[in-house]
Image 1 (cartoon, chains in turn brown, purple):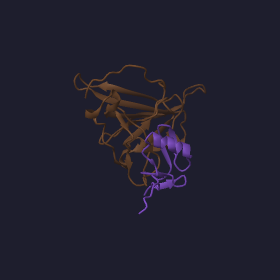
Image 2: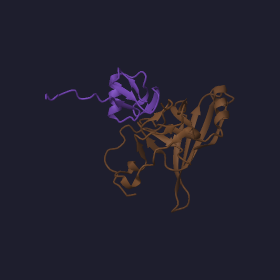
Image 3: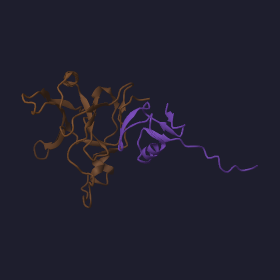
Image 4: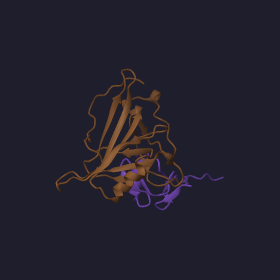
Length: 180
Length: 62
């Protein structure tokens, strides 16, 4: 991997906060992941993490599922962790919904131990960011549900999805329908 | 087998026609119009392609 320039006007659509809709897939529903970006062929920094128009291939009848979170209750961090010289990525995605009803409880029950691949976008993003990859599924690290005492309090169900090693990878398109 | 949409001008490949997440948002490939299909083809969205019509132009007379 080479050192590339990073200059000039960037990110005219840059914004904090995430889009409300998340794409959640069962890791074992995926038939094949596309090859990782070819880092020897990169010409910009973005090429190191850009899957471009590659496709994630699902098993028959399987696909990503849409999950609609509440606005401004979801967040994401990607941290470099580990000793100097052996740094790796630790990615944490928090999905929050201001509801604690049976849909949320059922969702937590069904997915608290499931190996996942999750896609999301920041506000202003065109591509999806993917957590979890081949042999490195994302997992639920934390989560829960809270109903405060006051009506003005923060009622919230959250789930924190964690993936390691790879940075979040960028991909143009993901399927919400099954393969043909 | 790819599925033809929009009077056969475009084909959905890789998935059954339905919702896909793309650079321009979540689109339902069963219900897009031709303008959207052209946009998706232009940005190399992998689940759609334009059907190549054979060139019926010049025929040489023997």
